[in-house]
Image 1 (cartoon, helix red, strand yellow):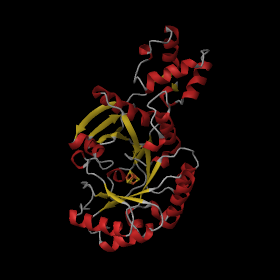
Image 2 (tube, rainbow, N blue to C red):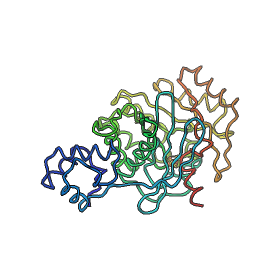
Image 3 (cartoon, rainbow, N blue to C red):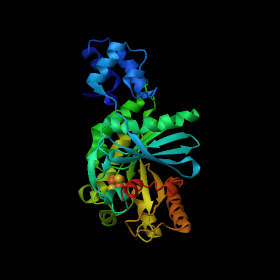
Image 4 (tube, rainbow, N blue to C red):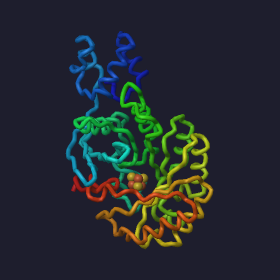
Length: 343
Ligand code: SF4
């Protein structure tokens, strides 16, 4: 059976031709799936009845089941969605001044075991398929279309490491970009990585200028080794080389995410080390106050510590923003809803 929601427009045309149909049927089906958000071949009313029946026999339409929908402040909604094999994945909808952003998961669990992350604690179960990544956004789109809104931005920052599920993640981005579907510009998409250097270099050559967001969280290898085991494999100098390569190839400035944890990486000395490290990198730093999780004793920093940290970076001419705290009340740090549901 063909996983039809995973097919790019050209692949869908080829699939239609393989069924003895004209290729334009591929564009029609693509629009039904990705623009009109239809979940049954029977509802594709501009297809001949015989073709609808044939599609039902040869293909399936991935549809995640929304288990829960938790509304937070300022338009944030966290969705828990169930896959066909009863795994739960999470996706978050955020409303900003510039439109709706869908934050999607790429794996069930995660192998990377970052010490401050709830997903890292529950281990890895499996990669999501392309259609499972895509359907998270389509379910959100279906939800927001009740209010005549559209998703304008996609970020792969939910559970999982997108570059550890490279093919499915990149193909999902291409599907979001297709004009027959959501038609979202690559410049309005972001991929977040904990620092898989080969994946960053590969993405740089993909020809899709998405924003690369690197989870740095520490400015020295000693501290980063403790917080993020991946650093022992790809230490900071290699990571910064890969970031520079990404910038050269895509012309896009790289964002460095820095989760600020009290008494771990929030001192003025840490801020000065970070400023020194990123000097001349044309980098942008996004400071994220730590979102407390049950499994760890880490603590959220005070506003005063956050402000001091930001000021030191800005004085060193490193553009810095503090992530608007949309997530705390819906447990939107990655991985935080799923373990709650599972317990
Ligand atoms: S922070 Fe990201 S890469 Fe690290 S364990 Fe969590 S989901 Fe995985």
